[in-house]
Amino acid sequence: MIVVLFGISMLLWLPILDIESKSLTLAKQFLGKEVDVVIDRPLGSSHPKHGFIYEVNYGFLPGVIAPDGEELDVYYLGTDHAVDKANGVVKAIIHRLEDDDDKLVVMPEETTMTDEEIESAVLFQEKWFKHVLLR
Image (tube, rainbow, N blue to C red; front, side, top):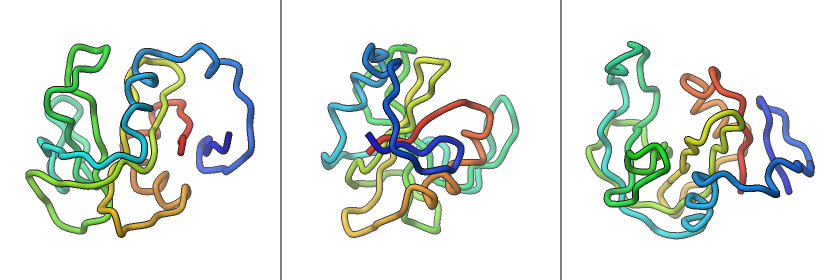
């Protein structure tokens, strides 16, 4: 398995991933699939509780309930302007190691990004969480 841990790409076997979190099990079902996303925190908006600025469009998959009781979260990358909905392909998963709240990384089909580019794009929020990037 290739993962990115804090911006460093590596080939790694993680025993913790053998016993998947509920969030990871759910997220893996969408990897490589085309999805429709509702953006509720557009690029440039501020987090309602913590006040940081969203540097990318952030939303959810409507009707897909995650273990936290909310809809499954999505980073929508590959656009430089705020949107309220989007369609794209799930190209990666941000798997949080210390909580059951994984995020899908969705992009337009034609968009490609390296692991490092994805990590850089989501750093504004993921810097607070131990995580790995899964493809």
